[in-house]
Length: 109
Image (cartoon, rainbow, N blue to C red; front, side, top):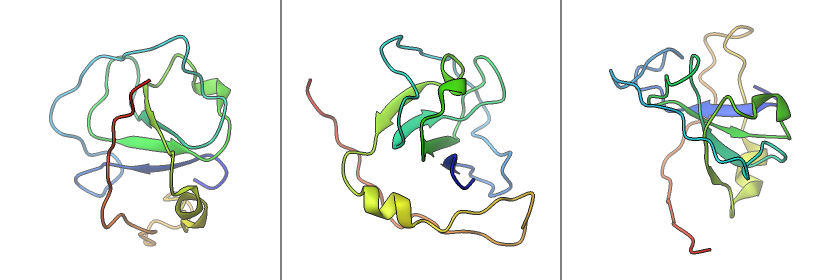
């Protein structure tokens, strides 16, 4: 969604798919949606996390306490900003850009 987030992780490609199970929220009060590039779980309400996730494109403080933040884009922000985003409500047939590969690294603090 332009200016808001890039969402992925739906195994069905419908926007409502999941893994067949859910897990609880995990909030850290030190992690806030105060900038773009944050990786968080998408959900349908409290404790309904599954497969879907999103990356914020801007600060989204209204999501604080509602979605579990579990990562941050630390390299490749240029790729994130070049995504051709889609709004499924406005253009349901456009698939948007997809990921070919992703590397997850764990940083020691």
